[in-house]
Each structure stands twice: as structure tokens, then as C-alpha cells.
Amino acid sequence: MDLVVPDQEREIRRLAALHEYRLLDSPADDELEAVVRVAAAVANVPTATLNLIDEHRQCQLTTVGFEGGDSARTDSMCAVRFEAGDFMYTPDASKDPHYRANPWVTGVLADVRLYGSAPLITPDGYALGSLCVFHDEPGTLDSRQIGRLKDLSGIVLALFERRRQARLNRELALISEARQRWTDTLLETIDVAVVAADQSGRLTVFNRAAREWHGLDADPTLEPQDFSDRYQLYATDGVTLLPPSQIPLLRALREGTVDNAEIIIKRPEADPVHVTASGRALISGDGTPMGAVVAMTDVTTDRAQQRAIEAARRELAAANEDLRRSNADLTNFAGAVSHDLVSPLSAVHAHLELLEETATPETQRWVAACQRAVTRMRDLIGSLLQYAQAGSAPVHRVPADLGDIVDQVLDDLQSLVEETSATVEAPKPLPVVACDPVLARQLLQNLIANSIKYRHPDRPAHVTVTATRSPEAWQIAVTDNGVGIPPSQRDRVFEMFTRLDDAPAGGHGIGLSSCLRIVDRHGGAIRVEENPTGGTRVIFTLPD
Image 1: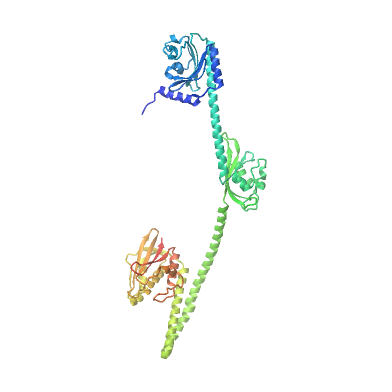
Image 2: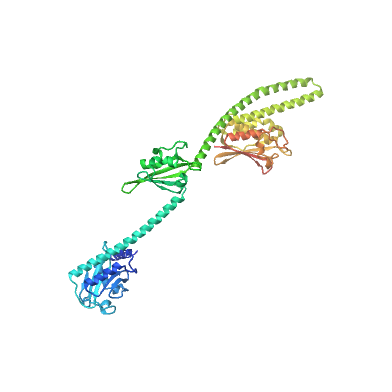
């Protein structure tokens, strides 16, 4: 890493100061030319120049008595001692050890004899160059002349500074103008309404969105108490005109800030706009109040959606209440069915048995038909009762051992399993799941019984119950090797009273509907897939 010595660092700063004035290679203005002429007159010499010293050269900004130009810094007489900050003067440069070998003295560039140089020093102490007077004859400068030349160098620096400040002001004006154009473009482009007022509450700014919503521009002559009537500002009921104390702009002016105040703007020949307004008071750097500004956002659609959601919630609550009553009615109906229908059917069945004992062979066939019809009716009523209980009974979810539930189901289905020579496997251990044990037992009993009933005629039924873990639920699968369910029917089988046309076994089409209700009430899902080795695979989930 290179180290910068103090003299090098000062030279870097001096050059930065010089370039800040942007004078090099620029024509001098009339005032600078006049100062150089006055300097020559004060010194009573025919030639004078205004020299600037940069990194490598001496730039003669303007001259009197000769045609100026650039020369090497190493050849410059001014560059020899200008940074000392003192007025440099010699009556005969050819005899001065500092200058006698200089090409401006030796005749290479000129034959300077009388030489005087007033340095141009910035307020920060950096030398930019010098105001130089000279003659090709020896001569003298008295103290009065030297004093006036120093004054003229100060004037030159003041002219430099004025020129720099004018340039900075122009640049700032351009920046300010560009910023204002950017701000105006932004305000006119955004779909947020921006409104501003001065410290007395008089309107000063309406952007495009504000003008469109109000149908008017800002009126600086309007009294603040008349804002609501002129610009149609209403409370959120859309009926009550806002009092001045509730107008967001005036609140920001009075209270310092306002956040998400909601109002209605009634537009001429258009639907009202529901807006939220936020803003704050404007305070200058010295604490002087300047006014206030608010930004208003259109929330008409959002509020309409909120109202729709609230209405839907009310309707849903009413529907839930109707559903609760319907479930209660269904439960009561199920009880009535259980008592008022099943009991008479049992009596009919008993009388048919008595009648069968004394009936003729012809009559016995009729009695048997009646008994089959009674059995079908009793089974149908049982299925309906089971369906009703699956949808209306309270769900009491507890941790339950799935293996124990499967064992209970197999106990219930023992006679069916033995009668059909079916095999049911449930590889242990099965997990503990969160469920209502009674409803889970009914669910698995329906699925396993279906798998046995709809077995393939060419092979004994084989049913497997397995469980796998997903991130937030247990997934239970009941897989069989039965006749299977066509893909086009796999969603329809969960509908009430649905039976497949080519089903080899009887049924009422209620069992899978009951399964769907039980799984739904546990917050899970159920679906039918094909078993790759033939048959059906029913999968349901029990979420944690």
C-alpha cells in the first residue's frame, strides 16, 4: 500500500479546489479581463496575466500585452513560489537566483525583468495560481502598487467564487426542477389520492386521483369548515356529512398525525369511493408548522368483500344451526325407526314363522318370500340407522389402538369370515390413532365386510389392513383381491344408494356413504384406488 506524504496530500487537495472552480480551458469573462488590465495599469507595465497552475501546466486564463497560452509547470515563474502565499516581487529577474535560469527570463519564452506576482489563495488556504505583472525592462513597485495588486488578486478570487456559486445554484435549480418534475409525475401517476393544506388549513395540492375522486381541483380560497359540503365527504354510513373535526386532513393538521381514518367520498355521476386516509403535519427544520398532507387509498372493493364475507358468515351460522336441528331431527328419526319400524317387522317375522308351520307347500313358498322381504327391510332400516348415527352422533376423539379396533371388527365378522373362507390380515403392530373408537370400528367393519361381500368368484377373499404415516395424519388402507371398482365409478360409490350394475352381491348402497360421513367428521379424506394385483384399495386418513 502506497503512503501519501503530507506535501502530496496537500497538493491533491489543492488540485481538487482548483478543479472545483472549473476555470481551466474555459474563456475568461469580461470582468476578469478588466481586472488584469487594471493590474497592468497599477504596476505601470505593458504586460500582465492571470495564471492557474494545475498538475502539469501553467494555464494563462487571460492576458494583457501578449498572446497567452499554456506552458509546462516546470517552466512557470509563478509556480516557483506561489504556494508560499506571499506577494513575490523582483526588480530584475535576470539577477534573482530563483528566476534567472527560467526560460521566461533567458529569452527562450520571453525576456522578463521586472516581475510581480500576487497569489490567488482560497478561503481554505489553497493557492490556485497568481495575478502576475511583468516588464522586459528592470523596474520597481512601491508598497502602494503592491497593496493594490493584492487587492486585485482578492477581487479575482471573489469573481471565481461568484462564478462557482452561480454554477452550483444553476445545478441545484436543475436538480430541484428535476425532482419537482419527478414528484409531479409520481403524484399524477399513482392511484393514491394526495391532498395537502397550508398551516391555516387552506388547500394547496390535489393530485390526479384526488381530482378524479372529488370531481374538483383544490380550491385555496375555500374555508376548511366547508370542505365536506364542497367535496362530498361522508362518514362510513354514507349519509352523515363529516364535521370539520373528523376530516382527516384537518385532523392531521391539528393532531399531528392520522392513521387509517375511513370516509366515503361521493363522486359526481359515479359510485361512491370508500377510502382510508393517513397523513401527518408538515414541520420545517426549525420547527415552524407548514401545513399537513394526507394520502387516501381506495378500499371500496375490500370493504364490499368484507361485507360479503360477513353476510356469508351469518348465512353459514344460520345454515349450521339448521344443520344442527336437522341432525337432531335425524337422530330422533333414527330412534323412531329403530323402535317404531323394527319392532313391528319383528312381530311380522314371528307370525310368518308360525304361519310357516301350518302352511301347505304352496303357501310356504309365499311365506318364505315374505320372510325374505321382511329381512331385506330390516337390513335396510339397520343400514339407514347406521348412516344416521355416522353423521349425527357426537365425535369423541381419543388415542385408540388401531389393532384393538381391527380385532373387535373381526370378532363381529367372524361368522361371515368363516362362511366365505376369507382371510383378513392386519400386520402388527398397528399404530395408536386419534379417532372416535365407536365410529372407527363402524368404518372398518363396513370396509372389511364390503371387501368380503364383493369377493371375486374365482378365489377366496383376502383382505389386508395397513397403516402408514404422512406428515400430519395416519393413512389407513383396506386392500382386497375382489372384483374391483371401475375407475369411472370410484367417486360415485360414496353417494347414497349407489350400487354397481355388475355387483355380484346384494346391498343397499349405504355402507360407503356411511364411511364417507365418518371420515369427513374426523377431518380426513377417503378414496378408492385399484389394487395392482387385482381388487380394490380403499384409503382414508385420520389427521392428528
